[in-house]
Figure (cartoon, rainbow, N blue to C red):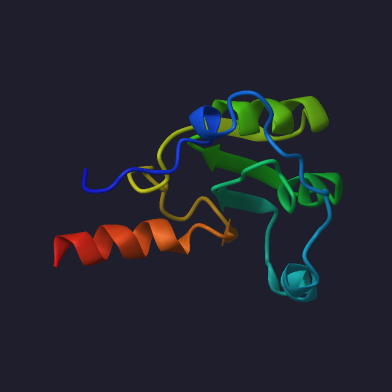
Length: 117
């Protein structure tokens, strides 16, 4: 695989900064357009958007490379289905999700594409 994801477990080995858990207003505006309850969050991080979605009744699967972030998610919300994986190689099951959400991870894909050129 070309390029590497940021290893947040190594970068923040002593203390990972915690972020507020609050649904982004931009995402909230579009929730009524989703026909079902299955959500995939690629790069879930600490669950900023996914925890509120789970509390609203969505079935959220979160994928992240950081075991520390996944642990924070698990401690804050036991309703999440959490998967430790590199999102660049994660196999998305076709037709399973009504919403695929990803925030602040596009640069990993762009870097991978640029390095292949």
